[in-house]
Every structure is written in structure tokens, then in C-alpha cells.
Image (cartoon, rainbow, N blue to C red; front, side, top):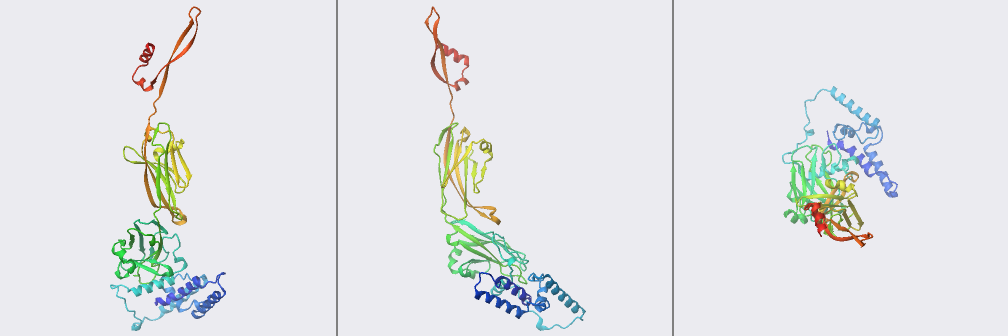
Length: 458
């Protein structure tokens, strides 16, 4: 079977479907050009009429595992007719006597698989794969990889957003391939005009573009094989200029071109502009008062990112205990030891806007004493429909230590005194004489009888 012959009709049908469909907003010249090209392709390759089902190109496509489903046919009747033609041909050939002589001119020279395909062969295979790919095989935003019946190359769902100066790794996997178990990879950065900047290769040291060679030599840009079919592109400290679309390529080791041989993912690098400024208006409060914890944030404008703020306390044990988290989706998550207190209204958020986030602990207790910490996280939505959250960065600051002073209760002790103005007539009035204040805690040390006896003597 001639594989180029079998690919002819699928490739032409795909070109017509993807590039020669007339749209309403096309100019008159463009419409005329598309119509003319379509008519010429149909005439030259007999893509219209009953001759199509019996053409040598359709027969070859049916015998090719890549195209045997004839998915480029939109008419089931046309597809069934083509299958019938091939079945009749097979029956006719089966009835013929077996020929012993083989024409040497039909023998195909085997490629030296030990040496592997050349770079020119790989590029040719990749270009052919691109021409044969259908709309269903194109990578859509949010997909993990191109969908195909053959080789599958996967990269993470994009866009990937990171902060300047962070260490970044982008993973690439390949599956459903033929040939050696250990696969090679190449990474490049797609630039304007469909040009590419070659970054790194697992098998060709000459692949690297001279403009990035210093970064590769210093391992600021590197790769790590995670397995026979998996690799990571790594940045030690990513730069703002590293923003762009990255392409992972796997050179073909397949007997036939099938599936996709590269996958793209976008990387966005934002500046490190997030600042956290915590404050405590009162670092010492009496038991029963409120503790106010402020966490002010500022940052440069970054599209499609969201903040969350968490408050925690570090007590004598040294462990950080979560109190409450707000965001990134305006939801509230309360620490396990503070759920009842939040339910009772003992925790209150103070959201004034403009980067101000406050948490008020009402009716302070001795257990509220400790070192408070404010953490701010920056997030972005990711995945299909933005259902998943991915944390971009996190910054934590100590708000400060809060001391809770126990409340001391006092008791006024007074004595009632009868003051007689006329002892003979018994005329007089009750007066109250303030004696002193006694701390209630004294009651723990003295019996009430002893206190009263002492007061009577006074």
C-alpha cells in the first residue's frame, strides 16, 4: 500500500473543509478564489460524482488504518459504496492463483531503524501530520491534549501563570506511539509570524538557539526526563520576557504518521507586585474586649487573578492554627477550633475594600493570646469552565503578638448604720457607710465569716 496515495483524498477534503469554506465576511475576490480552487480540486481529483467511490485513492484510504473509517465522507451511502468496491476487489483477488514471482521494483527499501529517522524526515512527517489533522484533532483551549487515534502528546492545561523569579516546570507526555520505548523531545517558544525559538532538545545539542545558549549552559533553562515518555521543561528563575506559547515536539518513531506530534501551552509571567502590610490597633486587650486584626494588601493590576486572605494564630506550642480564610471565591472557610465561635457571631469580617481585610475576634478570651499571622494567596481559575483554582503565589506576615489581660472583679462592701437623732423617741434613719473594695479572689482565701467578723470590728 502506498501511504502517500491513501492520504491524498483525506488531505484534500481537510483542506476544503478548513480553508476553502466561503464565509459571509469574505471579500468578493476571496470568495471567487475559494470557489475556483474547490472546483479545480474536485475536477482534478474526481471528488464529485460516483467515480469517487471506486477511485484508487479511496481504495488506498480504506486499506490504511488511519483512514479506514472514511470519516471525511459525510454521506453514509457513499461510504458504504466505497466499502463494497473494495470487498468486490478483495474477492476478485482471492480467486486468482498466487503469483510466485515478486517484482523487485515494488520492494520498499527498509529504513535503518537503529540510526533512527533524520531531522528532515521528522520535519516532513510533522508537516504531513499537520495537513492530515482534522478539526476534531486540533487542540482546543482547556483541553489536556490533542485528540487522535494515534500518537498523543499532552501538556498542562493553559494558560499557566507564574510570578517573575519563581522556579517553573512544564511537563510533556507522549503515549500511544510506536518504536522505541524511550522517546525524545524538543521544546521551542512560538514567536510572531509562526517563527519558533529553539530552546532545548533531549537528543540534539545543536538544536539550541544561540540567543538562549547562555541560559541553557547556566541551567537557568533545562530539562529533566521523568521517564521514557515524559519530560519537564524547567526555568530556575522565570523572567517576564519568558511569557509566550511553548511547544513540546516528539519526533516520529511510528511506522505511519498518526495522531499529533506536538502540543502547545501558554505561559504568562507576571511581576512580583503583591505586598502585605498587617497591623493590630491594640496589642493588649482586657478579657471580654475585641481583638482587631488588619491585613492590608496592594498589588499591580493582573488580569484574571484573585486574592484570598487567611488569619492564623501561633500559641505556646509553636504550631500555626487556622482561624478563618476568606476567598478567593468570596467564600469563608473557618478553622475547626473556631466553627462554634463563628456560628455564635464571635468572628466578624471587616471588608472595607481597597485592599483592606480585617478580622474581629469578639469577647476575647485568655486562649486568644498569642502571635497572629496574616497570609495572602493569589489565585487564577484553570481547567474547563474555570472550575479549578490554582495558587500562583503566597505571602505571609506576622501581624504581631496579642496579650489578653484577665478581668479582675471587685465587690463593694458597705455597712448599714442606725443613726439615732432622738434616742427617747426612737427617731432616726438608716445610713450607708462605704467601707472598702475587696477583690473577689480573696474569697478563695478567707471564709465569709472571718471577713464579716473583720468588717464588724472595723
